[in-house]
Length: 193
Image 1 (cartoon, helix red, strand yellow):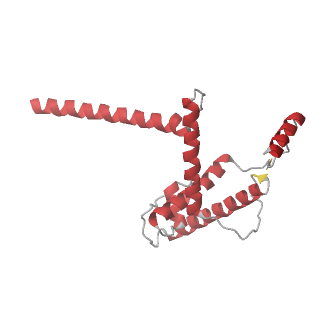
Image 2 (tube, helix red, strand yellow):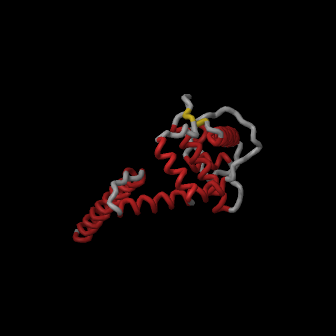
């Protein structure tokens, strides 16, 4: 313990910042593409955990709303037909490509390069259900940290859900209440006639 405290004192005395462990690479990888890949990994883990069976890549593309001309007209419950066979194959290949790129990004980040889609052969694969569980644990912990900070009086930036989703839900509920009230008024007026 004493050695560790001496180490901390020495580090504070020199005030040298350590070299960053990760180098941000300038390239054409967009955050929207990173989010799409992360959503695919998350949803695959969630779906396979709930269904207790493997999910086809084309179904995953439809579930996540992956932007592609091939997803038009397909639904998650679509049966295999001659008409949708080509779309299913192309969507499956697209999702497979996203998974491969996501693995490259993750492996390169582990080696200090982010975001880099430089092919790297490690022989590793994603464990989708474990990734889903870990992300859930991470989000729960971050939410607890936010609540503790907020309760301590620290100003905390609202989450995407609080900024965008929650107000939209509130707005939709208000619209539904107004529609229900209008229907009741119309029914009452119709019953008087």
